[in-house]
Image (cartoon, rainbow, N blue to C red; front, top):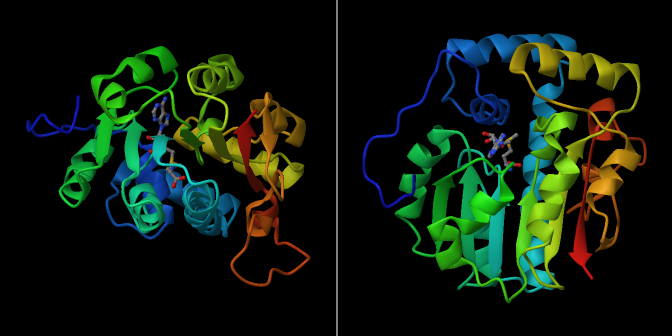
Length: 267
Ligand SMILES: C[S@@+](CC[C@H](N)C(=O)[O-])C[C@H]1O[C@@H](n2cnc3c(N)ncnc32)[C@H](O)[C@@H]1O
């Protein structure tokens, strides 16, 4: 379904949704009892879990600032985009590159429902409902074909997303599917839950049991997602250390340690 279709979007609220749970952790109010159940369990396991979402959302803004302001990219494929909130990709990118084109992709129809309001603000963006595990189908989507020129560098964004793919869903293969379609000079932006030991394992259990997804991978596993690309400074680091706006304490809190990210350039 594309934004051009005006039929009401329907979504199932009896099951928890990754996008609604994440949005609730960020302080949003569009959640339902099924999501609340997940939120309660996550907060019971780790009371600071809301901070995990906030760290992720904050680095998304800083990352896009880098992609648009430093790397000068004008095309963005935001995969697993989530509900519109503060500092959305198109707003940040277009403040540096006014003609930047952004396609938001999410498999949760609620994102399209909310995205329509956001699209009213800006003609250079599209929201599509599609499953990012099928790169060929996403890349062939008419809105992607219309908005993205695959002869020019593209920002492939998988922010807060790949940990929601199970190992048997081949996250590395999914990343390759997108990277293979874009030219040298394109960038890959990933943030990911990090396995650090017993604490991260307990939170992983909670995510898997109550939300159904949420893999905490090792640093080596996450680095493999970037293969074929060169990480820009400061590399793959805890999000608080990725080009922070202010001074960061050396000693990170547990929640700061369990989420990492980086941006790499296809070379
Ligand atoms: C935690 S949110 C991250 C949102 C945003 N990228 C951010 O970092 O602020 C993950 C999003 O990925 C979406 N998602 C999960 N699996 C997906 C799939 N197979 N295809 C497309 N989107 C998916 C969820 O619906 C959710 O909106």
